[in-house]
Image 1 (cartoon, rainbow, N blue to C red):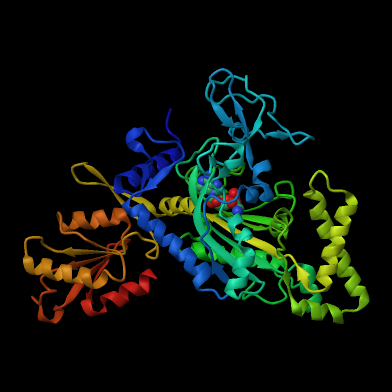
Image 2 (image 1 turned 45 degrees about the vertical axis):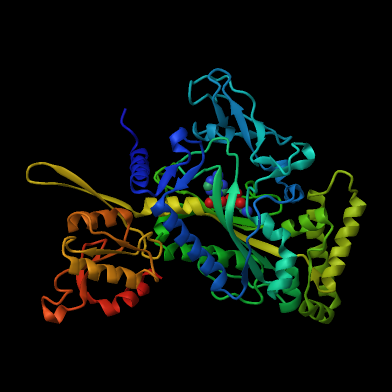
Length: 554
Ligand code: GAP
């Protein structure tokens, strides 16, 4: 049977990634380890560029975001507060006959079925579900499998010393919220960004690096005022159109405007590194899909070669990043579990509240009270009574009237490795040409945006055995090196060297030839500059080369 086209495309991408040193299987010489991947020389550069661009766009180039770099292992209390210990699991089932293990929702999805969640919250396989490996219908009932990797801190392997490798970078941001607030001189609205490793013991890692067990995230937690505070200060909460960029942030923005803003900012980021809008898709989570505390979540998708078609034959794509409006859930949880206050004081709110008519105060008070009561009820500990919850919600609403609240949060959370895979799939292009004798040759070009390309410029002396050319080429390399990643190559014909750089995705090559040395006096100290994507060539002065390149790679 012929391979589906999309699988062939993935196979070609995987093969190029290995051949050119983008991605290797981890521990390959020992047979590999499922769900773990290493980045080779080109992959490491690509990844570095992507992370640096995210960091610059999200923190350094903004007044309202500060950075954080927290540890991977943290107090296990963090994961109890966040809910990960109790609920961060996937439903898993086994084939009783061939012993193959599946993620139950994926097993159903692969057969166009939907996993059933019964009234008690337990999962059940729909009738007809079979093992996709041996066709047996003898499958175990789905049972939850917690995705956190466990370890022990210190020499004693006891329950008291259990710790977890973080399954997301976000929780450290919440746990350090107060420290960052106090040391960065930020005021709500503001954000904290972090890039770092995350670990999930995925039941079935798949689609190359798309679902890995060790991966990296780039997460921003952007803290905002509750809508009731905005309404008290500004009279009303701004409404923005449901599509398109809402423009520069405004003081009267509530969670909806901020959510829309971050979706569009993130799309802008992707466009700026070469993923055009038509390669992306969106999934707006339905009320059934949303976590109970979330107000909205928009996933930005990329159309990967393995992405499935819908019933109309359109490819929707698979998740690159989720942008969630998470209410005040996270900081509230850490306040409750740690006993440390996570709220902020806002004098503008206190003053505005005092000037409000009594009717308005009562209306805002009641709405805030209801929201807090709702949260407190849903996340109540077993021994908490309705009276205790009402008392706490009353205290919280009274706090709002005095200018105090727990910030709400908008969370754009992206996966580095998924983005790298998207950028590689997007850049991949191949051309097969057949000569007069019928001999076919395929050439590969990785059309990375210059901002992310692993190598920015190839420096090539026309001939290796002419010391004057080599000397000049090395001088050009050394001139550019402090500013960008340069690759010097003097091996093989110039055509072969161009082809090597095309496969690496190098957007520009410069060749040092006899004209550079002044064979035609008017061309002294100029080089031939070649564009990767169309092979176009032009002459450029060496003295202008650095700035010309910098203008295109930044
Ligand atoms: N703090 C929110 C959070 O972690 P998530 O949707 O579970 O949300 C965010 O993860 C992003 O992390 C995803 O959109 C994806 O890009 C990446 N990610 C999640 N699990 C992954 C995995 N197993 N392998 C690679 N990337 C993953």
